Image 1 (cartoon, helix red, strand yellow):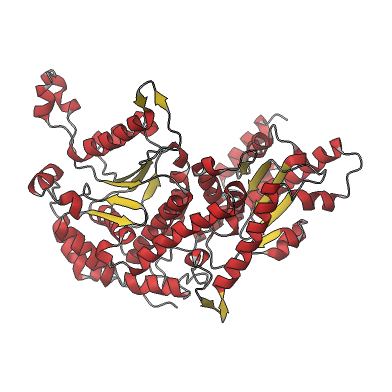
Image 2 (cartoon, rainbow, N blue to C red):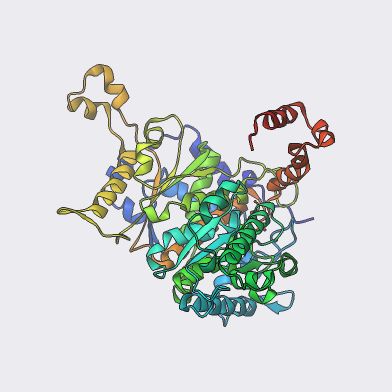
Length: 556
Ligand code: F6P
């Protein structure tokens, strides 16, 4: 049994924060007016990221108490234990070493008497060699044609990271190469993703940590059939199936025995380790599709970005440690001010999958009711993370953030240099995007008073509807440009924010038992859909009725 976490409610800092939260009335307008240095005092640098926390609902006293809380729950000790490779994933009895994936080769981290950094670099060298071969055309399909499309088949962490990063880094993708992604077991996903592809020039990467995931293995079989049918249709002298598969299928997994069972040549498989959680794996071989797309040098820069933030998190005093401060602000909002969700709003179309990626990272990590010693949590945990790129969100849900009754802290992300610098006549369109980023964070913080509304000549009857209360907390994150290194920094930032919150709550942020029951039941229920009366009869009345509806209405 693992040692009990510190109950955060028993700390002096918690008592002090509870006292402050009682009757707390934030006044961002006043705070800024009273302290012209507020922005300077609450802005921080981490790697290439400039992080402005000044429009959060805190003053120096609250931030100090949050930092004291981090100390009292022994965050530094837990962080250091993670970096050392101790088994802090207690329910799975595993080390948590995604940070080792981006360590320079000369660093030693021993797990079970073995230096894992050496292993990491050995796999990276193989991934890079493969990426170079595909990019140069040295690796060819079974009919001798160069690969034009890489299809990653995976789900959860074996999909969300690669697809998010590929979308974010599209300008770095080699001309003539494209990646596509299949994740959902809904056959529409495979059907639509394969549409228009040429089997001769398509390479599949089956990505699965366990190589036992129903969705991924089903989609891999669908793709294998599509490939074999397609190749045989154009090549009458095609070799036996395994020889075709060997030129068009590679795998990424920790379970290399299962890869072989599936029929993928182990020589074409890239491994990783049980100490890499699925949602922390985009920087392992799970990122192979990305490495092919952007090339080894850029992938190396991506890893360098992660490492820069790892070092910041590991070495910076808590009071200036950006992931710690952002994580503790989230604790302030969710545990003391009642926030239930957290928006992430990138002012960058290239980051359009970033909120979805963060949903798995944060919610699969911290959506827990039990602490690492098996006892119930003592506070509310894991907020709902969500978001969309600005400005699309402005025309959809920002109304609720500005004038609704819920507190929704939001992170705004923007870049100085656009991915696509386009002009609309004399207007730089990126500047219009940035103007919106600046306008929204300003409106949320400072609002608009009734007197200001009246001064615009608004009829009295609709003044209340046009008032913006302000005091809606935001964090603004800016970077020079969305480069591979900056993307790595952003991901690592949120990994460590998630870790920080998990430690306060006493949570094992690295297991995910809550996804298991549904998986088991799906396998049990499936025969009933196919007409198995015994399995049907064993279901609850609601499930039975839905299955009957399905069987009555399905047309083939
Ligand atoms: O949804 C549960 C989960 O285990 C995730 O944690 C993981 O990222 C995903 O399934 C996919 O798992 P695998 O990579 O083993 O196929």
